[in-house]
Structures are given as structure tokens and as C-alpha cells.
Length: 220
Image (cartoon, rainbow, N blue to C red; front, side):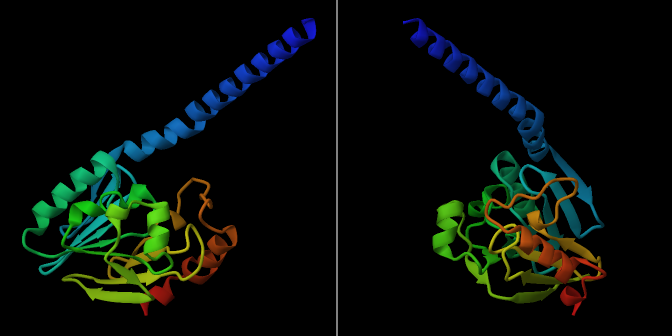
């Protein structure tokens, strides 16, 4: 009987210790990341480009007389606010949504752009998308290689990396005149990259192929 009680006591102590460790990990590491995701900030880069930070992944909105491009559609309240702003700006102009990858903090707002084109990397396909994201946020087009779009004051290149880095279908968006690159979660500032759906070697290959010395591959 005493042995059973001792075992129960130790099991209880171990359980409490695990709960304490998980709680510390959450409040020290997880909660700050969640707070950062939820925070929002608007950064204007001239009259035709605005960056919307937070509310999910950082998003860019580029405007021309004939098209509005949205890079990543955010999640939750951030997605709702972004879509309302974009639709107000676009008016009757078509909207092109580009998903840098399929994680929901970058794609959960896709369903708010019904009737418009939504592009994601060809590394996914419908089956993979449903497994990892929401079926309601399914893209309307899979980018096989690259696409170049002429805007009023810039030229935009969409490029499928065609290698497994953060995910198997990462997309880069490059603004030639502004020399600005949207890299989704392939490019992180001061954070350890998540490779739950990816490959560390792929990150290294992307760095050597696209991000060192210049972005000449995208600029051609």
C-alpha cells in the first residue's frame, strides 16, 4: 500500500512538473509570438504600396490603374480588416491575391476574395492544400514557374521556388523598381525558421540561389 502511495506521489509530482514546464514554455516563447502575430501596423511605401504588418503574416498591397495585388491574406480579424480595406481601394478593379505559402496565417482570408484570382505555388495542389489549410481558402491557380505583371510604376515577378524550403510550394514576389522582395516565411528576421513542413537544406539552397550577392535571377 505504501509503495502504491509513493508511486502515486511521484507520478503527481512529475505531472505537476510537466505542467509547470509547459506553462513556462508557453508564456516565455509561444505567447510573445502570438502577440506579435496579432499586433498590426500600417507602413506606407509611397502612394501605390502599403505594407500591413501583423494580423497573421505580413501583407503587401500594390495598386495600379487596372489591378490590385495582395500578397498574403492574413487570418482572423486581420484578414477581415485587410479585405475590407483592399475592396474599398480596388472598387471595380480586379484583385490578385498571391499566397507565399499555405499556412493559415497567410491564407485564411482567401475566401474573402471570392470571384478574384488567388495564386499559390504549384508544389501543393488541391489535395495537399486541403490537408494543411482550409478548403474554403483554395487558390484558383497554381503557379508552375514564374509570372511577370506590369503595374503602373513597377514590374512584379511571381516566382515558385520549386524546392522544399519552408514548405513545398513557397512563392517569392519581387517588385523590380522598388527592389523589394516578399519571401513569406522563407525569410525571417530574428526568428528560427519553422521546418515542420519544410527542409533545412532547402533554406540553405534558397539562400545561395536567390538571396546572396543579388536577386538577379528574379530581376531578369
